[in-house]
Amino acid sequence: MFEDVNTSPSLEGDMSIPGRRTATTTSQNGVPNYNTLDEPIRETVLRDIRAVGVKFYHVLYPKEKSSLLRDWDLWGPLVLCTFMATILQGSSSADSMSDNGPEFAQVFVIVWIGAAIVTLNSKLLGGNISFFQSVCVLGYCLTPVALALIICRVILLSWQTRFLFFLRLVTTTLGFAWATYASFIFLGQSQPPHRKPLAVYPIFLFFFIISWLVLSHN
Amino acid sequence: METPTADDLLQFRDYSATNNNGAPAQINVNSPTHATNAGNNNFNNAQQQRQRGDPLSNLIYDMSNSAQSMVAAAGAPDAPLDGTGAATAGGARLSFLTIEYYQQFFNVDTYMVLERIVNSMIPKRAAANYLRMNIGENPDLYGPFWITTTLIFSIAISGNIANYFQMANDSYQWHYNFHLVSYAATCIFLYANILPAVLWALFKYSLKPVDQADAMETDNASYTPSLLSLMCVYGYSLAIYIPVSILWMINISLLQWLLVITAAMLSGTVLIAVLTPALRNSQYSLFLIVGILAAHVVLAAGFLLYFFHSPAATLSDMKMYPPLPPLRDAAQLPHANQTG
Image (cartoon, rainbow over all chains, first blue to last red; front, side):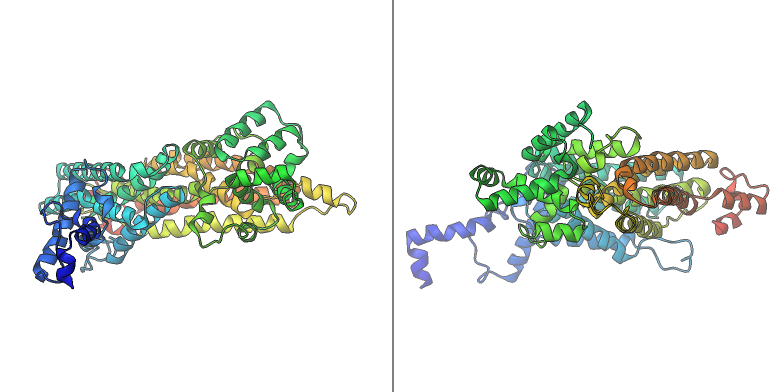
């Protein structure tokens, strides 16, 4: 029966239509038609990882507008959010009196609930974008902030001076501006023009708060 | 209701362009007697005429569905109920589970939000019928929600920075206090939600008794704002504290208290001025005015005392450690860190 389908030219043309949607994710590796049943698990996993990696690349180099919106996934946001929450959580050391950093769950909730609220806001303002697309974009746009966090973490290894604090400030500001700009590129088109500032302001606030957490982490 | 001034007409024009409700605008402008409860009356009239089968109103009804739903949104708060009133009145069209139901509370433009923010800061800027014609017609939750959220984080962040300025130097490992966010969120959300509800209930229960004969007309002429409108007004009234909370980082207690009084007075005056139509209806208007102003001042003072260092605390610190100049040489006194 499968041979029939594969050999019949007309049906083959039909088969390629549902395949095209997923093929766009992996247009980079040039495999338009694949069968997830037959291939090794390693390839399936690698293909998904590659799709996530391509999205990271698009956030860091925000030129193509619709690349993140076509196929959303939440793997990247999950990884980024878990990573940032792990780094940012206040240490429960003996010096707990003075360390009042956020808990793991607080960072986690701020990122996810924040993204959900920002998305809901743009939906309520009449934006034409699906819920998870927007959450996906906001999550992936955390990448510059997460990079800034890594750099800050490295800077924090040495003895702190005012210059190093200034360096951290610059790094975080760059990450914040980058993230806001990227998400504006991806999400800015979904709003009617007279409401664009209303939709962009919550995004700005969202990244500002997370950047603040990154900057004040020590 | 007095005849509309040129200001009113101009102002209403602005909003009718954005609001999409052209029909009530005309009626309001042409016959001021109807303008007293514009949304409600027009909405009911439209429905009655529609039931009667008036072809013209049928045509209007069919052609302007969005305008009708706008009037429904604006007319529901005019009914003597709150959000539940809006739910029952709007429920005929939209289930409260759909996102379209909530979109009517976010039906604002950038210009409108900026206008309302500015109106909440500068006294005498809003027209006398601002509450009914502007807020009551289209109460939005966009401004209140994002203003309170911004205020929460701006207070938490500048509280931390003020703390940093007071104790930081090269040798002191400064730790930020994330819990300020939780405290600020609790207190601001309580203020922005509980107080309008209390005020709304007080307005309801302290309505002036009226004569039986002209009860109907007086009821129509009076304007008691809906819960949604009150929440909208209160949310916007908090906007002035956002720049103030940033300025509070400057550690001069005289300046800080001056800011408290200025901000609370500015937005408190606006609150009173905007709520005047409702206060006039109340038996305890004086008591309510004092209560509104006092709550506003107490909120500002509480922000300053709790999230920024109170002058009393720094004074006592200086008494305990007389040689301690507050900003420069804290490093030489290791126990200063423990007190903070």
